[in-house]
Image 1 (cartoon, rainbow, N blue to C red):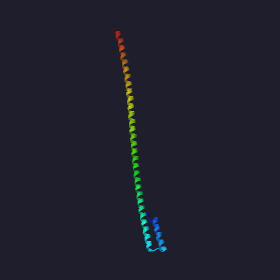
Image 2: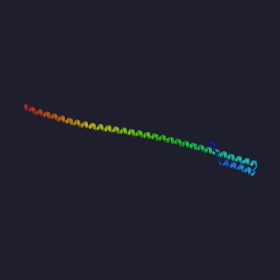
Image 3: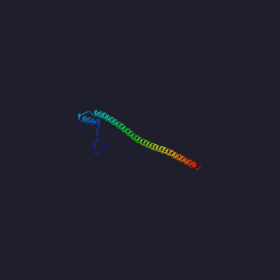
Image 4: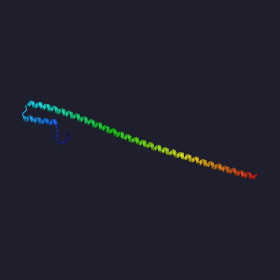
Length: 141
């Protein structure tokens, strides 16, 4: 159905209906019997068409639900990827901050060591000056 030049497919009940009509015409059944049989087969064909339409509707609804689930899954996948990316950026920032803090601690320790060394040198120089002055001062007496 829906294609140009395609033969329409007959349902099994409609096929039976046509066969019964032909058999009735050949077998010489009365017109009243043919009409009753035709009506009965027409009702069955209508019921089958209704059932087929309902099945098609259920199938379309099922396909619609499946498509919606696929869209939701894709959306959740994108959200998850964004969350992972954000977490990776935050982790990278933490690592950078930690590295800065470690560098600052190293520099601070190096500055303390340098200050201690300067202080010791200054005291050594002051003691040396004191000793020289003591020696020179004692010689002048």
